[in-house]
Image (tube, rainbow, N blue to C red; front, side, top):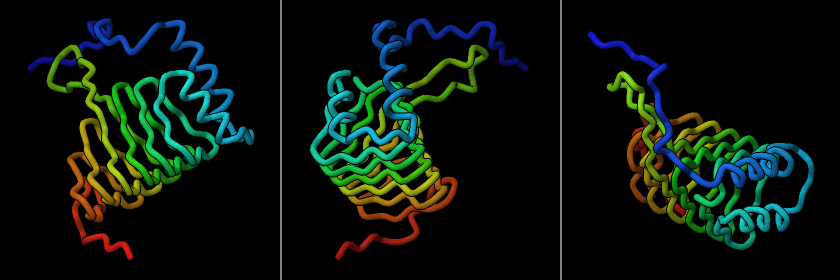
Length: 182
């Protein structure tokens, strides 16, 4: 039986960007996003755009948000990003218009291959289509697409795609009913 050998882990093939740019972004993320100071939404939007994000109008960023690499992030119009949200976008994350990500939720684009002794890093994009709501403390796993107006309820974990207008709950998240928007 093989054993995991983390001493042989090699992440050198993963290059998300220039090291200096990553360092400067980490400082900006800590100073302007990962704290409770009341920086304006316009300032935060401008900073993300400066670092390569595509950000729509009227996006709300609550305090203590963490964004890994803004140049791999696209946010539509009228989105809400709640307190303590972690966007761990090791690859592309796309949010459609009117997406709400509630407090403490995580969008995780990376994982490790537990079948390999070298525990290789695996990354896959995440897409949240128009009108999606990710509940508080919910987790969206690598490669998941949440289709139009899907809901991932509080504390749930999406391992697979969520169908349009479905309300999902649990771990793994299961479709429990249809979302009716009036």
